[in-house]
Amino acid sequence: MPARPPRMCAFAGCRRLVQGRSYCAEHQALIDAKRAAREAETHKAYNQKRPVSDNFYSTRRWLETRRRHLALHPLCLDCTTAGRVTPGVVVDHIKPRKVFPELELEPSNLRTLCRACDNRRRRDMTGRT
Ligand SMILES: [Zn+2]
Ligand SMILES: [Zn+2]
Image (cartoon, rainbow, N blue to C red; front, side, top):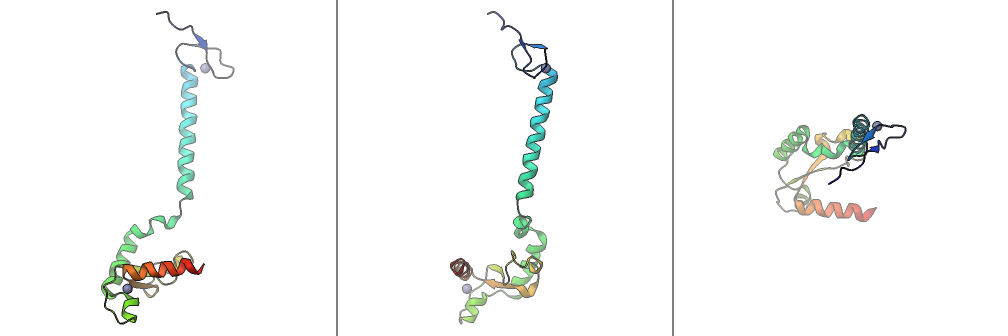
């Protein structure tokens, strides 16, 4: 099999001859570096776009606040108001975190709900807007 004829490096202005690839070693390294930089940039932009609040519910401070709240208020608030006794599983923010992020760990801004009541409140909330 005859070897493929050498070609000129595909980098503009470079006259080095290469065989079986597009760029000479120097320009291939340059292209690779540029691509890596671009990927790093994309990655960074993606991370910056993610809202900071994303991880809130898995932070230690939230889990600790939640645990303490459930220990003090183990029953669903709505069910209690309605005369039922239902253990709560959801710790809900009375004033939403999106609007009052400074109250996200404030004990008086939390209430215990059961799954059903939490779902109903969420439905009511989206229905209103
Ligand atoms: Zn080159
Ligand atoms: Zn309930």
